[in-house]
Image (cartoon, rainbow, N blue to C red; front, side):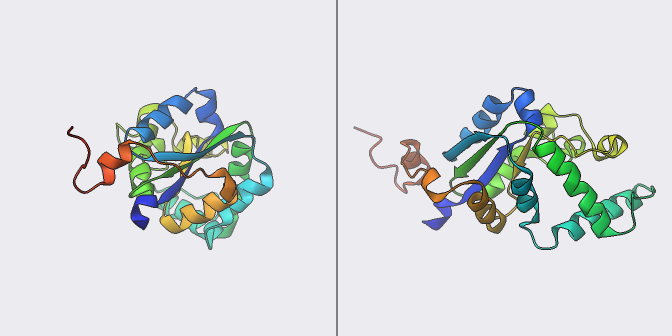
Length: 200
């Protein structure tokens, strides 16, 4: 079934690498039953990071308006009232952040892969992420702190936010031949209807 082959992109960002969280991130995702089908260690170029964030239509405007709304909600003055200007500033900060050191990019496959990983990861802002999520457990950063410092928020990893986004992101980060098709024994437990073959 197609639902069992859903894929999502996860990128452990430079701060996650420096904090030695590669194994922890992989362990947490692996325990759900999702299957790792591609993995790469690299230092991304500016062009790739720019393409990555601009894969979503109107990303600059959306993220810029989100910033304005967030500031207004807190009764503070946003850096700019122009959503595009805010978006461009955020994109430049993200490029600086994501190209500052190595990252681990991965493709995970399985039923509801996108939703399961998003649930594990927590919200974009670590401060508001629930305890038990990766960001909630391992990061103390906030939008307020990152804005004071004039940098991108450090939140350990990226995870695709939708199935459509995941398809575009996987295609950007991996060639088709870099994604391995194989079977895990545990897939019989996860997906076979009658759990055939357990009893001798």
